Image 1 (cartoon, rainbow, N blue to C red):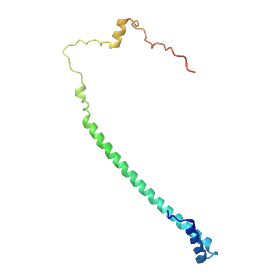
Image 2: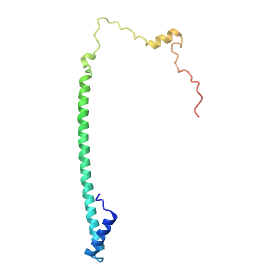
Image 3: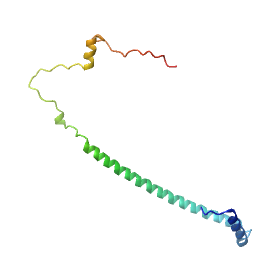
Image 4: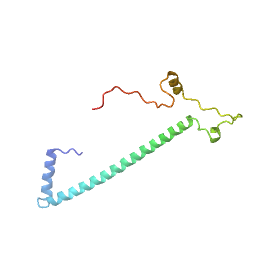
Length: 131
C-alpha cells in the first residue's frame, strides 16, 4: 500500500525509539494499532456501502431490461381469446356426431396390432438388467 521497504522501516523504528523512548514504545504501538484498526473498519464499511450501491444499480438496470423485454413479448404475443370467443358455435341440427378416433388408433386397427378392448403395452426391451 505505502511500499515501505526494510531500510525505511528500520529508520522509522530508530526514530521512534529515540523520540518516544523505549519505556513508552509499547503504549505508542498499541495506540498506533488501534488507529490502524479503526481506519480499516471505516474503509471496509465504506467499501461495503459502495458495493451495495453498485449491486442495487445493477439490479435496477436488470429489472428495467426485464420490463422492456416483457412488454415486447406481450406486444408480439397473440391475445388470448375471450370467454365469448371460446363458446362452441350453435348448430341448427340436434344430432351430435360421435367423436372420431385418433389417427394412431385407426392405424393400429387397420394393421391388427391389437384387439378392441385389449390394453396396449410397450414392446419389451432386449437390454440386460441394470447391475
